[in-house]
Amino acid sequence: MKITRALISVSDKSGVVEFARALEKQGIDIISTGGTAELLRKEGVPVREISQFTDFPEVLEGRVKTLHPRVHGGLLYKRGNALHEQQAQECGFQPIDLVVVNLYPFEKTVANPDVTLAEAIEQIDIGGPSMIRSAAKNYESVTVVVSPDDYATVLETMNDHDGETTLKLRERLAIKAFIKTSEYDRAISNFLNREQATDASFSISLPMVTRLRYGENPHQTAALYGDFDKHFEKLHGKELSFNNILDISAATSLIAEFAEPTVAILKHTNPCGVGTDADLREAWEKAFATDKQAPFGGIIICNRPINESLAKAISEIFSEVIIAPDFEANARAMFQKKKNLRLIRALKPKSDRNSLPDVRSVVGGLLVQDKDVANGEVQPMVVTDRQPTEAETAATMFAWRVVKHVKSNAIVYALGDRTLGIGAGQMARVDASRIAAWKAEESGLSLAGSAVASDAFFPFPDALLAAADAGATCAIQPGGSVRDEEVIAAANERKLAMIFTGRRHFRH
Image: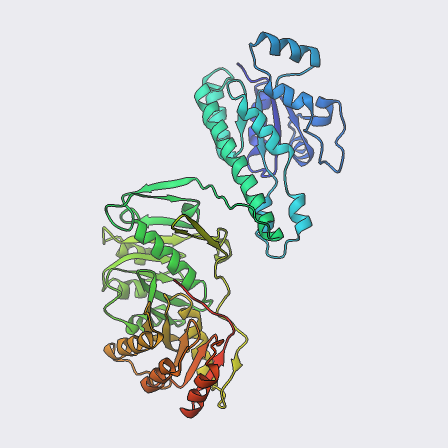
């Protein structure tokens, strides 16, 4: 049936004026609400307020305006059904053939860490989801649009079909609408569950971004869900694999710890080396010097646009993925000579990268936790007789920012601008300490005067003593062991300075 009447009520007003103007040119009666109606009138698009259509005023500060039988009757009655047509006429229901609604920005509101419960509740849309669901249920006759991305498609279809939309399009838009309302309700329930600490269930629904060739291994099927493609843009190279995506996520979390120009190299989500310097080539040299073997086939990330000098250095080894906010023209041209190298542009600010919780599968269910987004800055508490020097303090802070991203048990040796040795994923912390020292020795790096960071407390003095034997003069760790006093005594005996942070960074 030809569209004769549209109801437009949107929070995201991008493109709505142009869309409404195109509808008005086709003679479509436009009904609107609040800010949307005000905007359309200001832009010269004739609209009727919803209160004129329902013959009922907006009340309760706008909480009740579209929750009216004339709205939902006009959406829900079956066109061509004799009983429905008769009752619609008796009740004065005028058909609404097109609904254009997007919802109050609840998710954006609750993303603010300082949001209050009252502020969040006011952003719970009631009328919008109700109209969307009514229209979507009756998609055989009604077109529902929940995203500005679909405006052009709807207009094109109407132009091609004498003012009508196709059943296939209405069906697709209805499915999209139900997904939208389910995601919206899920966001609300998850927020309230977190705020009220109830025993409600956890649920999540994400659109598919792409099916992957396989998972961690070729015999495993896999797909990517969410909005990963809005955070990263692939500029060159093969399609991303499951493992590439894991590495990109880990690299992005690591580099977010650093405001200064920094280059990091990762392998299997673990840092191989991290370096900072105003000269990006120097930052690379510091990172690469930590381990010159592991970076082969690794992931490289930089928090500044990559220039030609850095690109030349990176190009000397084989890398799977290189990530940066941008690439200078000569650098990009150099990388693109390598057919399989994946170049990734990081698009979003780091504050947007923690919108989802950390979810891991376990036998029979899921573990859900907040992400470990606490930054590397701590209020250090020196627990030893000797205070750290300024250089040692800088080294401990650098090591602490990196060790958070190393698989437990984790040990990192560092100076104030670079890593020197990294030990990851060992069953005993003393082994992680020894491996990190051995890696530094293999790379020809001295640990004399370095700082050592541990992601969790030293349960015994042995790991600390191994670090001291390797040359470390300062340590940083969470503290909290029943043997803290023994560890502190061992540090004092070796004249080490030691800082407790009171914060653990396990990474299983």
